[in-house]
Amino acid sequence: MAKAKGKLETKVSSPFMAGLRELPGSKVFKHSDGSMIGMVDASLTWREKTLWMEFKAYLLDDVIESLLDSEDLLAMHLIGLARKDAETQAQLALDLDSTSVCFYVIWVKQTCVVVLRPSTMECVKVRATTDAVALVKRWMMNWVVQLHPPSL
Ligand SMILES: [Mn+2]
Figure 1 (cartoon, rainbow, N blue to C red):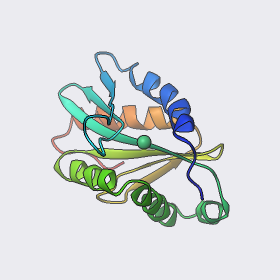
Figure 2: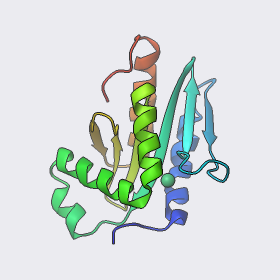
Figure 3: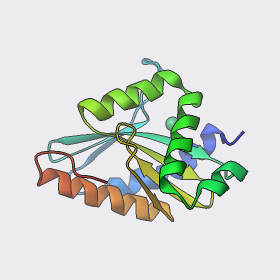
Figure 4: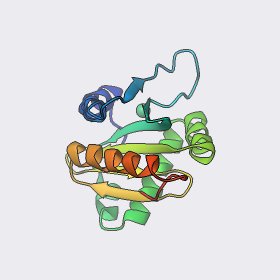
């Protein structure tokens, strides 16, 4: 099984959230799912836009390794893992991505970080957390000057 412990997820997502907080005037919240089953992990609000995020961390296994060269197949596999992980949350992430914007940020341990939108399966694979921060910051900047959320 490729699922890693929640502890790993916290460890890898903390620097990511810290990076997003560098956007001047941003509000980055880590949500507790104690009061709402399936709540996604975090949100970023900046200049009147709010982006929802669900973090996942998986260990590299043979299946993932075989998919690394194809971003489409990798995205499908990672979404499948996330659904198996928590079906209610997967539905919420999809709903949020349909009414607003929700990204999965998925760490494949020591290999890459995948940012993907569940509604469109748009997927970008980067090498490190700092690259994922830069991608989301750039995306947020594009969104504030556009009426609709841009492509990843
Ligand atoms: Mn999570």
